[in-house]
Length: 510
Ligand SMILES: Cc1cc2nc3c(=O)[nH]c(=O)nc-3n(C[C@H](O)[C@H](O)[C@H](O)COP(=O)(O)OP(=O)(O)OC[C@H]3O[C@@H](n4cnc5c(N)ncnc54)[C@H](O)[C@@H]3O)c2cc1C
Image (cartoon, rainbow, N blue to C red; front, side, top):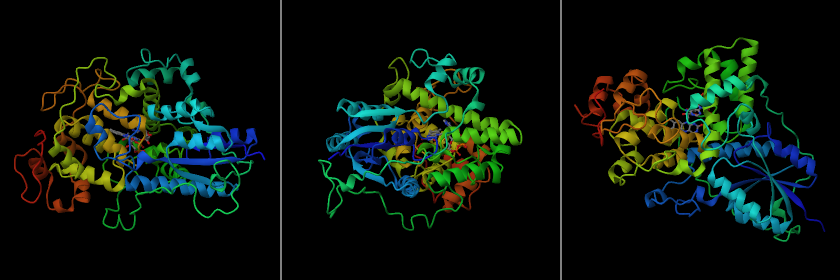
């Protein structure tokens, strides 16, 4: 009996469009299993991984990889995918476990070939290498970025650490001069024409099970306490459902219904609202939307109406994404060191201040702008780019905690967590990432006297981006009677409010 089968292993490409896996599976002709693996350590804070840090507090922070809002978005994306695959008579197999051991098992069972996307970061690189070393035939492709490796090389960009531009502007100049983004097109979906191979229906030797009395694989212990969790939350928050269909609908709605490309540059720094920015990030992060598909729609808008500063700015942000994605592939593990991409080791982490860390975790730092941002992040899994910058600045420069702990915290909570963008932005703000010197704020000193990194004055930011305190009042209703001057005076410790915690670290007056 022939038990041969192939696997499509989907990771951050939960979509049918612009996904080479399906065409490759059809070409091979063997029955296919379409698999999504939830690694154990995503949900188990104590699980050990081959990626422990030298600093034990980073391994024992109690953080997991998936919060409830993040799990909800992911599950919706998987359910959507399952629905779409069903129409092709294929089941999506959701498996909980260690990817490397699972592939070893499936190889015994008759697995011939695996189709999966290239690794984005060291952890996935480790999986792919370990699976290859077990003798599994892996075919990988890049379906994450706008440009291919060959296109970047044609533009004179070398993908090696010493030669890769260390600033975004250097990267952007080359791309804009040498690459034609108008030619980028996302491939349409390809229906699977091969048979379904159900992993649950076969024993470890690959024999079909006559009586499938119990599940072969443990079900995923999702953090499922979703019921009613949002009842008390502000209605104006990120609340879009996951999935390819919803991602494509959001793409169309933002551009054509909400007129986003005639407003984006003006509104993108707002803290509240439902359309101030595209809200494509979670769809891009899980791959429900391909970046190429987004760019194609921007170009179509420009062709039908006209290119303007807003449409160009959104493309510019996609280039930031592109830059971080390639930087992560090039620098890999360096991004996870305290000294980041810095060539020297001058930066040493200070011991963790438990009071500061606890206040951050509980969203009770006593600085209302920060607490409101943390509440939004924890409860909705999202906050604006402006808020993320402020949170990271306060964490790094005022609380003076190890920036990687902050990056891990974001990783747990952000529904749009993207390893390259998240770690890239945190390292950038900590002054150990790309572009460490040449930025307009580099001469700025934090109150602690640190010069490296980007520091923002919270009271100034509040005045500029939330003078009416809409965001604070939304997330901290107990401060609904307070105005800007009172919140600023409280935040810098000048005149604290009786009914709100005093700041654990007061911010600068202005
Ligand atoms: C400390 C910190 C951590 C962050 N972590 C993440 C993360 O894990 N995942 C993530 O997608 N974004 C992250 N960002 C970038 C940015 O905040 C979000 O992409 C954006 O807020 C998502 O909302 P949007 O899709 O409406 O963005 P828009 O403003 O509409 O931008 C469109 C797209 O461009 C890309 N983009 C926007 N801003 C950036 C940026 N600063 N760097 C790289 N790409 C960008 C994203 O793919 C985004 O979806 C982080 C920013 C900071 C400061």
